[in-house]
Length: 479
Length: 87
Image (cartoon, rainbow over all chains, first blue to last red; front, top):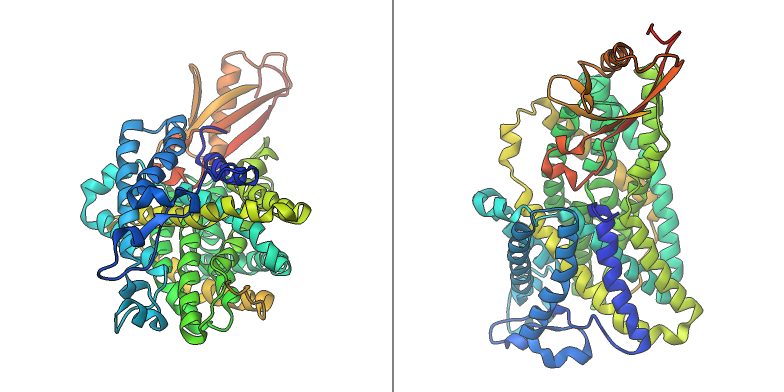
C-alpha cells in the first residue's frame, strides 16, 4: 500500500482533503495554495496570482507560490521516496515541473488567451481566444510536448517526476470533494450522473469491446490475443486495460507494450482534437459531451485532462453567449464519472477474460485463475474519490450547519489543488510523449487498426451512448 | 506450494525459485518442463498434487508502463501426479 502510485494518489489526495476538513474546527490549513487570475498588460503581479484562502492574503503571490511548493512537495516527495524512485532525481525533476506548471498556468491566464469576448473591454483588449482557464491546460500540454520532443535530454531528466497517472488520480480524489460539495445545490444532478454514468459504461463495454475485437480480428487479421488486447486498450481504458487483458489472456509482454505505446500517443492526439470538436458540436448538451469524452479518451490522465479542457471551453462559450455559465468542474465530473466506472470494471473484465482464456480458449492443464486478480486490478484511487465524496456528502447532509465552515477548506482543495494537479498532468503527459516513438517502433498496421477503431467506431458510438443516457441533463449554473 | 518468479526474456517464459528454474516457449511447455524439473529433484515423491504459484516480475515491463499497471498476471498451477516418480 505504500509502494504503489495508485495507493499514493489516495494518501496524497486524502492528506489534503483531511487538512481541508480542519476548517470545520476553525483553522484553514489549505488556503495557502496559489491560484492564478486572468490578467493583462499592466496588471500587478499580486493580482495575477494570489493565495485562495482569505486568511492567507497577506502572504502575497510569492508567499503563496513558495508555500504551495513546500507544502505540496513534502507529501509528494515522501511518496516518491516510499515508492523507491531515484529521490535526488525526483526532487530535481519535480521542482522543474512545478515551476514550469505555474509559469504555464499564469501565462495561460493572459486575457488574450483566457478572457471571453464579454470581458475584453475589462482587460483593455480587442481580440482574444476566449478559452477560459482551458487555455492554461492547452499551453501546459504544448510546453510539455515541446520539452518531450525537442529537449529530450531535459525530458529524460524530468521523467522520474513526470507521472501523469499519479497526478491525475490525485486530482480525481480532489474531484471527489467537488462532487460531494456540489450535492448541496444539485443533489439530483450528481446522483443522476452517477447512475447514468454506470449504465452508459456497461452498455459501452458491451458494444465497444466486441466491435473492436471484430475489427482487429476480421478486418485486420490479428491473432486472438492481440485482438483482445487491442480491443481492451482502444475501447475500454487504455494502458491499464491493455495490460490487464494481456495478463488475463497470458499474452507475451511485447503485445501490451506495443499497444500501450500507441495508446499513450493517441491519447494525446485525442486530448488535443476532441475537446474543441465536442464543445463546438454539442454546445446544448454539455453533459453528453463530457460523458462521451470519458468513454472516448483513453488513460485516466488524458481523459481527466480532456474533460477539464472541455469544461473550460464549454463554460467560456456559454458565458460568451448567454452571460451566465455552468458550475465550474461539472462537465469534468461527467467525463471523469464514466471513466471511474470503466476503471472499476477493468478488474472484473480481466477476471472474466482470464477465465474464458484459461478454461476455454487456451486450456492450460492444472492452471487456476485466482479471484484475487479482481482486487489486484481494482483502481485504488477510486476509493479516495468515493471517500472524499462521501465525507463531504455526509457533512453537508447530516450536519448542514457545518457547511459554511467546511466550504472554506473544500474550495482550495477542489478548486486550487485540483487544477494544479490537472496542470501537472498536462505538463507531464507532454514531457513523456515522444511522437517519434510511433515512427521508430515498426507498429505497422497496428497504427491503422487503432486509428480506425478509435475515430470511426469508438468515438461515434460513445457520443450515441452518452446521448442515450445523458441527454437533457444540464449542469448546475455557477453562482 | 512453491513461489516462482515468472519472466519473459524476449524468447521464452522462465520460472525461477532459488536454483530451481524452467523455461518454455509457451506457458504450456513451461509448465511441462517445470513439472519435470520438480520430479527430477524428487520434490513430488509421495504426492498426488503439487501446487506452484508464479508471480510475474513487473520489472520486465518498460518503466513508462508501470505507472498505469502495477500488476501483469500471477498464476497458480496444480501439477497432478499418478505417483511420485511419474509425471
